[in-house]
Image (cartoon, rainbow, N blue to C red; front, side):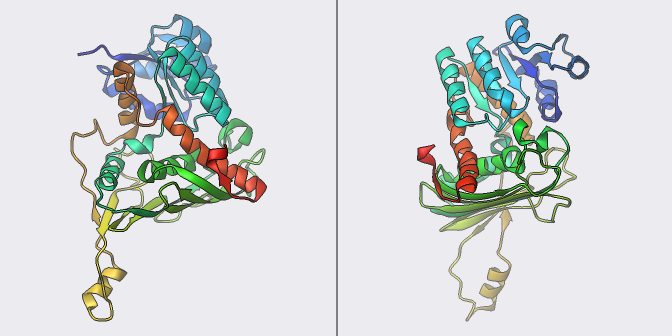
Length: 363
């Protein structure tokens, strides 16, 4: 059995706590050996929880001196590119939180640095790593849905929180922080997007430097499907959202509302995923057909037990990162792949600024 991947964590904010379970539950596959934060008490507290002795306040020092093979970058967006590039130059693999970087130039520089050093660059698009997402992807790939015609995502979240999360200069805003995950999931299911239009608004007084808290976008996929997304931070979360839908010629996938009491799913993005097969119906002649139109026969998508290590997508993504770093395989959400999700987000921002549709090939 190969030695566990030795990882240095940088940034001990909220998202790093979601990563902790992988290190605590699977030390035989991925082992946290160093923790870094510019606020030493925070780094020490995280290290104590995870049984790590090596604590740093200087990232460059950790790269130089710590016993690590890779870094887990849980800092703000503006730090992702310089930290991932420094890791590559030090010969370390990098898992970086979303959004991948601040702009496409930074994304491309990260990819070039990783390729030059021969290391893995992976983006933490964790929604791809749930059992339900993997099962939905399998249904799409095996043709159960037929040709995909449309997809949509609808996100309303409580917020904004008074922190870097509502400051555009720090990467904040509902699209950059939250909806990027949902756009990435639609791309994972349907394929790359060729054109977008979008409108972004900064409405609430808590939003700083134009950070967006109200976003609508239209997507044109390369395969001919169309999509739409809506994202907002508001005081209350409406029942039934977040949610997504994928519509094919043979059937439809529909996510259910989050189950806030499900401890195995630590972030309330979605609940279970349902599927309904399309049937030829005639409500004029058959009452049962009218009932099916009004109440579609959705059933939960079966997931294969044991296909993924757990139902916790954070654990699954970090173990996938460890496996790719060990074997050299391309991650499912590699930097090379995820630049296409970044194009969607940045295209929506550009469309909102110009009032015009944006061809992503031009970005």
